[in-house]
Amino acid sequence: MLTTSTYNGWSNRETWLASLWLTNDQASYGLLLRALKAADSDFGCAEWLEGRLRDQLEDEAGDASMWSDLLSTAFCRINWVEVIENNRD
Image 1 (cartoon, rainbow, N blue to C red):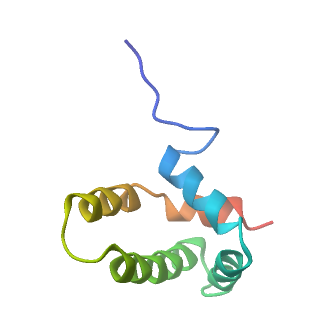
Image 2: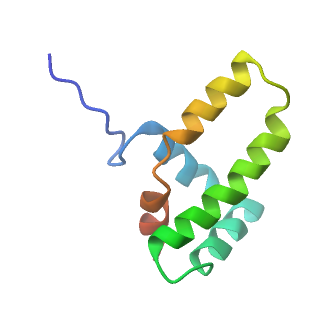
């Protein structure tokens, strides 16, 4: 049985969701716009965005738990370069 890990044209569901939420409200979109200007390369912009959001995740996820581990796992699956590339327009 052949399975695919892509989702709605994105590399996976986590990447699609991250991009969706980053373009869904003014504060998140502002962070995305700052990321797009943060470095000269898509990789640099992606690193900047991932770092800011990782800090936010650590602040909001709280103490170690099953939920914080699941959130961290999903966060690690996000293709941040793909998010940057698809929001460059």
